[in-house]
Image (cartoon, rainbow, N blue to C red):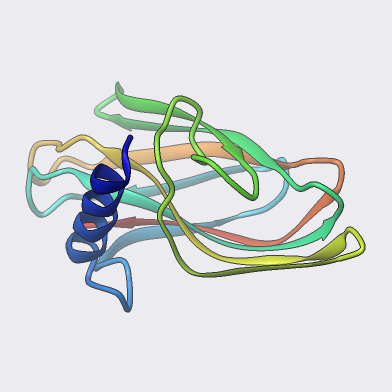
Length: 156
């Protein structure tokens, strides 16, 4: 992806997600803890795709990483599966491209610190209006990472 394309993707994501101050209207959210299953359900008001974001607060002791899997299903049929490999740079989704963060920062002094912010993960394809969508998964902290809080958010 070249600089022009990256800029267009970033601007489109910001405009499509409520502008510079936020990521749009929340239609569902859940909190996640280390290595424990999470789930959330939402019912789309339109058949348009929905975006999935992760609000994170981590304590670091060296190189940090959060891994996991997220599945979306409607009426028992898969709407998608995504693998998370979230570190300090690059796409947080295996096979993804680019990185969009909001209000994020990282501190690291002699290998210890913290990382906080919001990062765009992926888009759930549009589903029929009024059909419930179930999102499930698990996130696991790497050996030098402590999860203080994770909040998975679906927006329209």
